[in-house]
Image 1: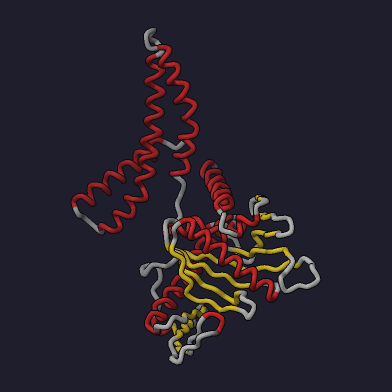
Image 2: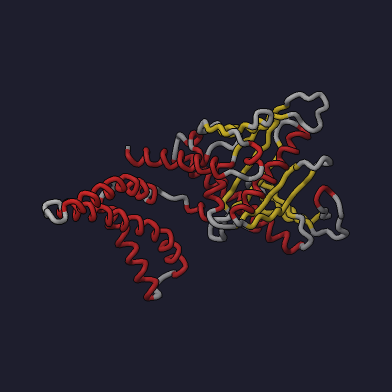
Length: 349
């Protein structure tokens, strides 16, 4: 179990934050953010102590003949509940990724497989859109290039809502599909792939970009699939020369495009820095579910057998139709639980 002195330190820090905010001292926004993150932990500590103290009180009442039966019943209930409460406390005390509460940028690109890969990328986009709808998130496509068949050459979306990155961060990697393509007349099963990247949105304090490091170009903007071509040069392309990252935005407002493109650029640079830090922090990074190599094949969608397999944790589900309609919670919950189990194991060593 967690040492009592650590729990006391958390309580003391929480009380300090509460007092500092009440007195209006320091950076209130920063204090409030830390306070909010600590509050559920403190509540879980309080509940665990309540159960523990209740067990001691029930044991003390066993010596009273008039209270013995009631004490035995209460003691049994509390002792049965204790392991679950202790486990919940351990989870609450796990180190948290501060990016979990942030909005995210979702990027999808076709891999091997030509037109079928582009169509599968389109299916994945729809899957994430449906998932966002179910969770009440705001899902905005900020850059999209389509093929003549309606597939996706590239798409970048901004997703905003509660715990977006926490829920979607395990989706980064190569998604493989096995099915008979609509473009295939022979009825043969093809294998193709698409790459998904989920990046936590950068805040202004995370990344500072030197204006001398970027080149901004304007160009003719077009609608989805190259239709409805604007007559004004409103699309914006920003090249970050030190990293070679190129981002574009094709909204009708050039001013808005600059804002969007700069936000995407900051997010990609922030992600590069996070990955660099993760690599230095752990030699086993490639084995970690949440931060593995994005060239890794993470999941296979087998349409003939209605089967989805997540290769990182060996999870197989036979409900592919529902999954493609955005029913992702079973997968994400399993990946989250696996990551938590790994962190708990690391804490105990």
